[in-house]
Length: 145
Image 1 (cartoon, rainbow, N blue to C red):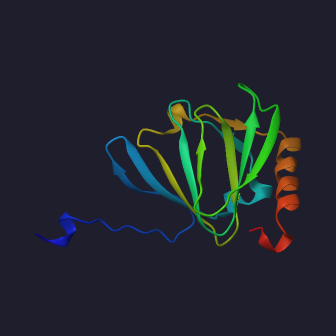
Image 2: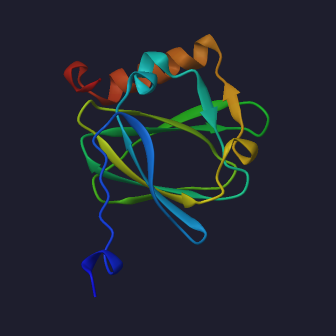
C-alpha cells in the first residue's frame, strides 16, 4: 500500500491564516504573523456563533484579546498564550489576536466556520488604542511584529 494512502503531510510557511486539513466536521489551520495582525492594525473583533475555536501556540508569541458584551464590546481583556497549551475560545466570545513575527499558531475549528456565522465588529479608536497598550504592557518593544 502506498504511504500516501496512510499519511498526509501538510505545512505552511507563508503569512496569515491558511486551512490545511478539513475532515468531517473539523478543520486544522495554521496562523502566522502578517501586517493585518500587527497591534496597530487590529480594527475588528470576531465571534463564532456556531462553534468554539481552539488555539495552540507552537512558536513565538501570541496575545489573545477578548471583548465582553453581546452587540458591542464593553470591556477588553488580554491573555498571553503559553506554548503548547490549548486555548478554547468559547462560542459567541468576541476575540482577536496579535502575533510576534516568529509566531505560529495551530487552530482547530469546525469546517463550516465562515463569514456567515462569524460576524465582525468594528472597534472604536479608543478600543484599537487599548489593544496597542495591552501589547506594549505585556511585550517588550522588540517582541512586537
